[in-house]
Image (cartoon, rainbow, N blue to C red; front, side, top):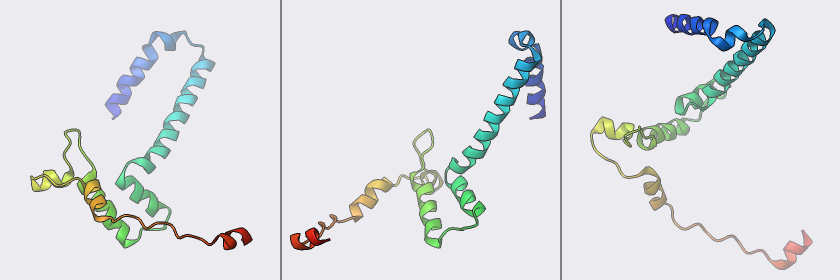
Length: 125
């Protein structure tokens, strides 16, 4: 990382745009870029998937219900897909698994119809 910083710093100092900017404008651009990077670093950790979510929950000192750990683990292992379309579970067990979403939907019966309210009760409320 230090080598990359040295290369970028050298390019920054010798770049034609950097050399033609007045020092005040260069300082303003540098401050703006620093704020952007800091904002990105703060916001990206909360959205980095399962581990980011778990870290945020622990950071907030709320913890997670035990059942939620199991759910997040299943989602991560059977539904997160790599660029080649495989899941962590399919790579580990070296076999395919049915689609998680379709499997869950197959287990859900039709939702019950909403209850019918009496018209008189609805008008009095």
